Image (cartoon, rainbow over all chains, first blue to last red; front, side):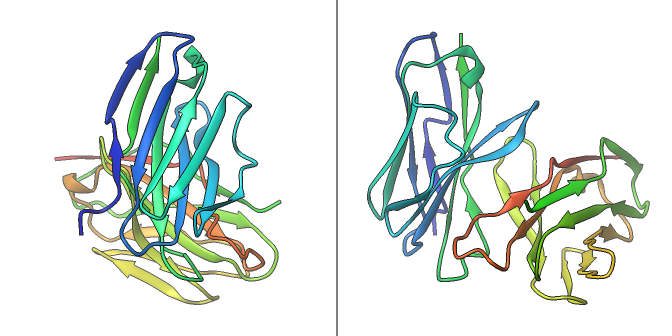
Amino acid sequence: DAGVIQSPRHEVTEMGQEVTLRCKPISGHNSLFWYRQTMMRGLELLIYFNNNVPIDDSGMPEDRFSAKMPNASFSTLKIQPSEPRDSAVYFCASAQGQTQETQYFGPGTRLLVL
Amino acid sequence: GDSVTQMEGPVTLSEEAFLTINCTYTATGYPSLFWYVQYPGEGLQLLLKATKADDKGSNKGFEATYRKETTSFHLEKGSVQVSDSAVYFCALRSSSSNTGKLIFGQGTTLQVKP
């Protein structure tokens, strides 16, 4: 299995631009998670989908952030407009089954907003 | 709310030294407990887990025992190698949760010197 795939791996953009991060979960997994990692705040859960439906988006920082999961094999996290404080590594993870205890993480997207 | 507290790093050891990384948690009921490891430039990966009190999780020479009485899940390894240098995250999943949401500690950086 290819594991969780994220793209792009690195993104450099200017403040005010729209940024779209992409994730392909492991085939057959029914849960998908978006995390943000920074030195200051550590690892934060942004949003969680189960069977393509958003279940918990309480971690989404503000209206500039949005996430979608149009089907079981694809999800996007969009930031519009981006700000320098959004600079971080964004991880996608997927899990399978009712307990969903083991989450499999992608390699992350390193975002730098200038 | 539920939370996880890890010892602050960085932890610097010489090769073949004994490793302990402390982790304590606050949660109601009987959460599931996890250790994830993040190697440089990669996403997190599950190292070991325990789902009930007194369970011992083990993998790659690492061990952790679920101690309900002390609400702890300390990570240990008898002889570390340079290749163990990474960031280690303790996490819990609440027993009352019907989602896959994990609550992570802040991470502990381990550096092993030859």
